[in-house]
Image 1 (spheres, helix red, strand yellow):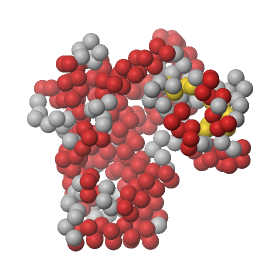
Image 2 (cartoon, one colour; image 1 turned 90 degrees about the vertical axis):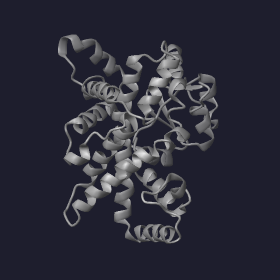
Image 3 (spheres, rainbow, N blue to C red; image 1 turned 90 degrees about the horizontal axis):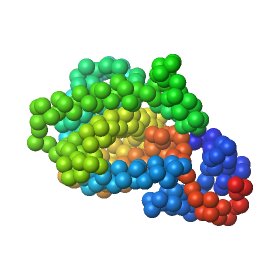
Image 4 (tube, one colour; image 1 turned 60 degrees about the vertical axis):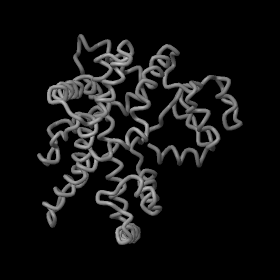
Length: 315
């Protein structure tokens, strides 16, 4: 979709109407206007919804900050070592790397959220969770463009049952997350994983973060975190394999960093940040194939929208 949107902007300019109530904006100056965190640009049409969303976002924003996520790096390293060991076991054998990227991503989410890998890499296959997420994302893709169908479907569930894959987020995946939370509470851990931080928020503000809120955040980690991570890994590795000259330059940079004692195994985030060619490859992979291929729309106040890109939009 993003490629088609770019084509439309090249043909029609900075503003392109992509639907009855949506306009795509290709103007750097408009980014802050659209995604203004002060609330000028909202995800919802109703102020009440945005108020609830904003309150929930503030509760967990510190948990998902880069600084907080760096505390989880050692747990990610454990999953990386396990992944490398699995790749070494299969050296010389054709594998579906796209699948393994997803298995790895799932186990990483398990490590940082519940202090335990889910066991996908050990099994070497999907237990059905990946299929459920794929189904949910497929339906979310078109429901996101025709949102009234979701509410129609929601009202008809008592008569027709759940016919949309997106319902898996509130069904089987939520059940899976709930069970993992119970297991994590039973066995305990000294890790400061994401769940521990969510429990800390719940203890501090029980009226704002109840048990359902904790389950929802854990479900979101599994639903969104694993898929976007896997897509990004696939894109980066795919484009490097398709362009061996760039892969060679990256390997040269890695070798140089190792020879000069500036690179650990696995690499630390602070070390990777000091590798300009690696950073370029990462960002280029994300640019060539974004993990989220659709727009991230916001509802704008009309007065601001009229002045965007110096073009008048009919209300």
